[in-house]
Amino acid sequence: MKSLMPSALAGLLTLGLVSQSSALMFNQSRIQDSGYWTSMELSLGEERYFRASNLSDYPDTAFSVFFVPDDCRPQLELRVEMGEVSARNETIEASQGAMRVDRAPRHDSEVTLTRERGDSGGYASFQTSDIYRLLHEMRVGDVLRLKMDNDEEPWYLGFHLAGASAALDRAARMCRESLPSEDEGEKEVPEDFFDD
Image (tube, rainbow, N blue to C red):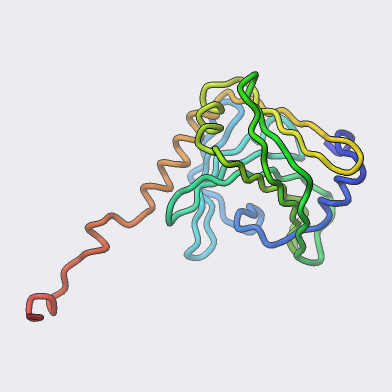
């Protein structure tokens, strides 16, 4: 992977900020493989996240979709193993990025590059305006291609999507199932019957 990455981008990825999705600090459970993709639950104390990831295409790089309880809105993240543990948390904004499934229209994206203290990964978080359209394309497509621009030259990655639909559906379902039901939020207590 490092041979695919221009030195300027590698320099940027040596910076970072605390990312709520850092898998290295979280316990992994309910792991299920599906083609090139894997779905799982991540937990640390009371915090829980649900993830669908392509861990198969590159030995030191993973593309993940996280579903975060509260609203279960998906978040997109690329993790690159940097081979050196970061001594501090930092972040830097990159130039534009883009994602494209097969020949579907491209999804332009803002990209935030981060590193976490105590973590050997560099993270790129993608924010795109039509994330649900992109996820639909990932469910039915063959390859997700990523492009990240920097001052020197862009770099590209491709992730196979076989198994993505099942992994995405499972991670999203686990997230929704973790939310308290409306009935739980409105439980009656004995005092309620005497307040008039």
